[in-house]
Length: 237
Image (tube, rainbow, N blue to C red; front, side, top):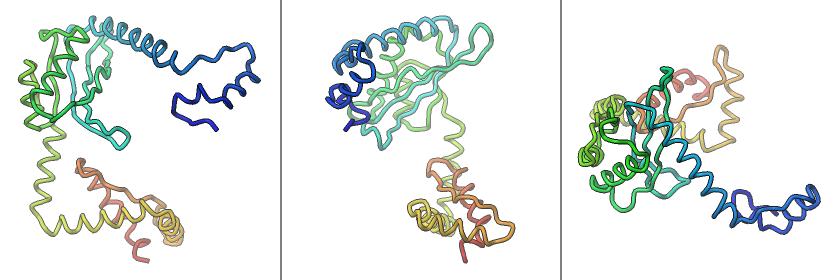
């Protein structure tokens, strides 16, 4: 059986027999060839091309943030470049998604930013600004790297709304109950199917799914509550 998503696909005897029968003249490359030759050559070619493209931009703005996902246990620092080309078309390119080794100190962030600017041959006089969140380590790291930066307005607004909501105990309790209710339907297929059946029996009620909010996006909490109000009749039946 093929193990999808791993290099073992190319070394699997069953897969090789299938390819030998389907395309007898084709010489199947080894996994080592992809790891040590093809992918490095492709990476070098794309990097060289991207450096040439960035060289045509007189001024470049950047967005940067630290993040991690369940699929990647490393903390990553992403840097995206934004510029306007000679045809006045807005362009952007992700130029870094590199792991942050050790603590997320200003020194580590500054080092990563500097390394990536040097890697892509971007001089400081071509940097317009870095857009970042309000974390002190990020602000200090960009300052130490010698680049101008401003906090993201959306993130600032998120902090304001979150602080305002958290100051009202009644609101936080109500949101917690709503979040738990939506979570029940999000994790139970049977509950979701039952809700769909009830929705079909309630007049003038659209068959919409409930919305699970994201803690770092205040508008998603608003949308979650709005959807619960819309579906209040099916939910109480």
